Image 1: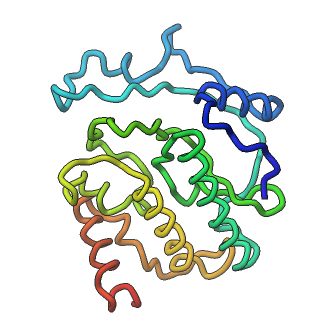
Image 2: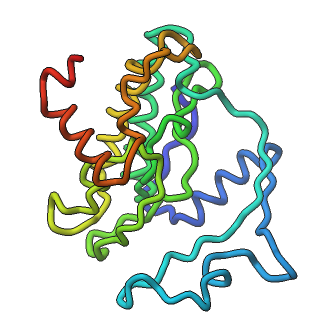
Length: 226
């Protein structure tokens, strides 16, 4: 278990970032990438491109170069089945703390974003798509760029299941389940993938096809047990 002090509810996102940088000052270096002395970001690249929706501008993403020391190994390099389950439980607890204490939603729970850290502790990393929680926030853009096999059916369908697309806590928790299924079905043992790719349909076709394939497998008992 982590020995880090819990975050207070009054801490802001900035204070959390400052605390992280303070604790990992010797492990991390980062800078914004510049091209011809101009920051490389979405706004600069797409300033002359007509937006897909006149009602919603694209999210501005900044190109950042980071150099960090090795912190852990990916979850699929687990040593034992017990370690796999414990690491997944730790990652889910960490996700809950991120949601409840920092008021952030991760948005990209995927295989390479869950790692086994020192002493076998599970951690989630990569907050590129994380968003601050706001109960009044508007439905999001239907643009989906996360890791395909672990995206929920609702997100793949662009929210058609509920009428509006808002990636929520439930979607992240469902992605944890897909991570676990992926390891169980695609790995023979730690670090050794199966020759038969049982879940390859979760990567093939457009988003609608992948959503349909995933839904069939989750609902149909024969397909799930196969």
